[in-house]
Image (cartoon, helix red, strand yellow):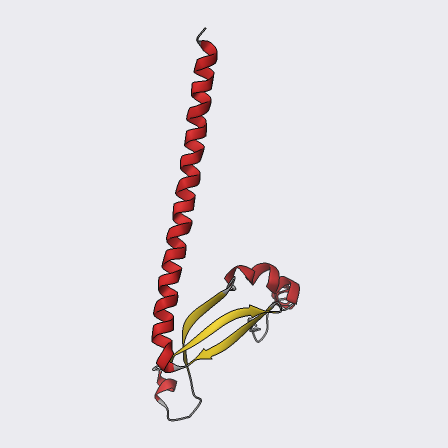
Length: 131
């Protein structure tokens, strides 16, 4: 769930915005693009909450690896053991790079197909002009 923080004394327009932003429909509409389509593996750093700990000065604990996925329309989070975390994250990063390359190749192919269709139309027009 995405947290929203209210200011101490917001203006009335801000109050309306935050009230609307806290509705489930608004969140789904505006934040669904950031959710993983199938799954994602992310590194996260955290604070333990102890008063004298290093994490209070900015040096957070971690990295901890988590798998994010959608189940029954809800975003779920599952911890990945430290022993498997580095390997899983490396494999997922490689997978994401391949996916990005495939998407770029598809865009390039689509552009080339458009150009070929326009060239084909030009030849068709030229053929119609020549008796």
